[in-house]
Image 1 (tube, helix red, strand yellow):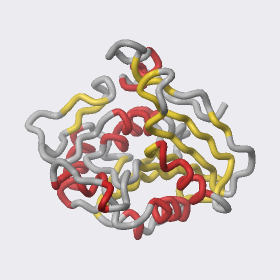
Image 2 (cartoon, helix red, strand yellow; image 1 turned 180 degrees about the horizontal axis):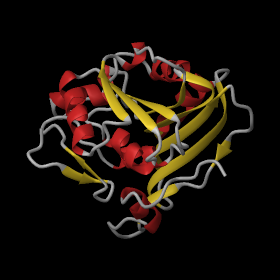
Image 3 (cartoon, rainbow, N blue to C red; image 1 turned 60 degrees about the horizontal axis):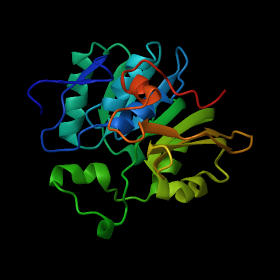
Image 4 (cartoon, helix red, strand yellow; image 1 turned 180 degrees about the vertical axis):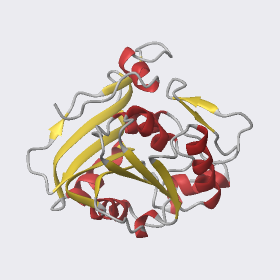
Amino acid sequence: MTREPDAFLGGKIRLHQLEDGYRAGMDAAVLASALGLKPGQRALEFGCGAGAALLSAAALYPEAHLTGIERDCEAAALAQSNIVLNGFEDRVSVTEGDALGFKAARELDAVFFNPPFFDDPAALRAPKNGKTPAWMSDAGLEAWMEAGLKRLKSGGVLTVIQRADRLDDLLLALKGRAGAVVILPVQARAAEPAKRVLVQAIKTGKGPLQLLPPLSLHETGGPGFTPEADAIFRGERRLALRR
């Protein structure tokens, strides 16, 4: 793991990460900011890794209870140590195991995840072996979506961030299982195609699909973040997907 913890979410959490494995980035902060958890609600993250999104959610929603599930034993142990490092032991936990086969003790208010971006081995050659599990899944995206919805109570909320070109697969996986879908495109800069989509749906929910104005991460013509993105990455703003 990293010798010194990384400051994440504007320093609101500290995070040891694997030196040669997957390193958390902007996706984790954006995902956590969109959960909209209420006091006392219980949420589960599939594939929590070292805990970047899980702990970000804990910092943003201080009265929620969160569980992470992670099949990589080293990453799961790191997530547990990060929970202790940040003092969240009273309401955040991690379980080592396969997210798709995880049996929750009760139906949950929210499930969220950043699923592996690829399920075709020919589509990816990871730069390091340690990153492969985070980017490649043995199961297809539909299996992740189905498993997430199964853990939710009626009216529970599923939130996912994924490649924009997988939007049709996400919507197909939700069809007949969840509704009141909200889609937030995430683009590097204004006028550029979105590379990510944040999709949120309510189990057994009703209502028309909503396509929100995109979230632009960087200022046009420069490397700096937009004010909205900067506030999200500092943990000073939550995304309000449902108004």
